Amino acid sequence: MALHRIRRIRAPLSERWAPRLPAARRSGIESWLTDPGSLTRRLRSASDRFELRLLRQGPSRALRDEYPLLGVPAGRKVWCRDVLLVADGVPRVLGHSVCALPALHRTWRLLRHLGVKPVGDAVFTRPRTRRSALRVRALADGDALRRLAAAARPDVAGPLWARRSAFVFAGQALWVTEVFFG
Image 1 (cartoon, one colour):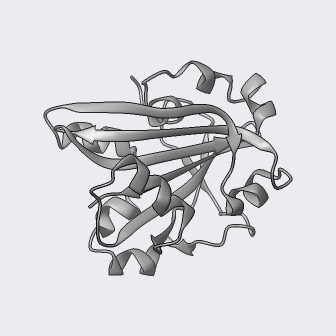
Image 2 (tube, one colour):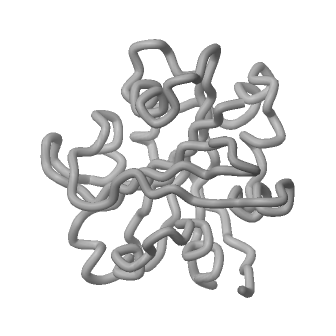
């Protein structure tokens, strides 16, 4: 698989998460939160066994702060995909991806057929894809992403950090959030 260098774009004004630096410096996992490359590729190279576990995929409601990013009215269904990235038998990252439903019939139609392939394999091989700046934050106890992570991995304890960015192709954004289990 040929990887292309993805051009960077600014995060939209509706993005409320902190810029990756200096926030990531407080996390203890700065290199993971700030790495602009493919997280899937990095996990594969750092482990003997890599697997992706598909938790859900299809029309669903977005998280509250994702609606302005997608330009979709609150409460409308979007395409949503949640996966666990597992290295050497241990779930390391929860991946959460969303895009507007109409994009599945045009720009992001390849997402409908991913199965257990990582989103990263799809976006990093499209030469005209651009990526917004990485944004990070620590997840508070009541945060919807933290609840999603706890449902996927009930044994998780302590602080959880997440990063988020948009992959933009032909003017349509695919938002990818990754929650790190430490």
